[in-house]
Image (cartoon, rainbow, N blue to C red; front, top):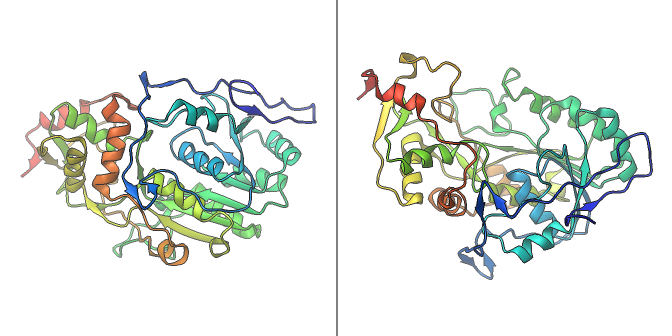
Length: 382
């Protein structure tokens, strides 16, 4: 054991042995996390604390796991007593502390995580290394293409379950909402690789479960979802929102998503099933701007509506959401698995702000260049 992360030992010589990367530093984006996590109580369990279900211990491989969803999911799996191996390229620290996590808790977690270093697109290495180890369950958090999954299935013929992170972005745009799991999908969507992966898992007869999140938010989010709004609110700037601002969308908290991933593990009801996972309420773009302001303790923001067709932003993205209604039903997960989101929107955004942006940490620097183009032009909608 080195750096608190255990190494997986291999008995073959033709491929690089598993290497141990330095564990995460005690800082993230330059800000130390030294405060104990504070959550609201629910019965005897802290609100948002990563609760787990009892089940037999499994040897689990997580493809990815060093960012956002994987960070919270791996905590849950270790807490439940599973042996967890993260498969990563080794370009980022294998583990990192959660915002506000005590050193003792983080070190205890870090000491139990195993690391398999490799490129998942090196299919020969994937087949050989995974076959040598053998795993009961695979959580595929970062798979994008079916061809990346097939070598994993080849290497693990006795796999008990393959749990896949897909996307609600696979649905075909429709006038009938919310999207349900039985709705038509778009074979031309930018997430078509995830559709093809779901089809591969079905065709191979694998015991799989596919999770389709909508927009995910929460501490450590690497996508500019809530962070986009927080940057503008902190700077005291107007919030530019395309068209009427009444477009309806949906967000799900990362901790609720991690809980859903745990809920399907070993669950016979989830066998060969697809589930939408997100918050159970919807919100307009304007409403989201106001919710972010409330979460961060900012004044009610000035919202500027604009017509995107009147502007040329080049390759820059002026707004982080699809300019359309986009939301999905989570009733199937509720009814079949008992999955009920713990976080309401403002509560979840407050959690994200207090544990991340409000501490001065964020993934991307503020860029107001497209805002300035919008605000500097008179062609805005009243």
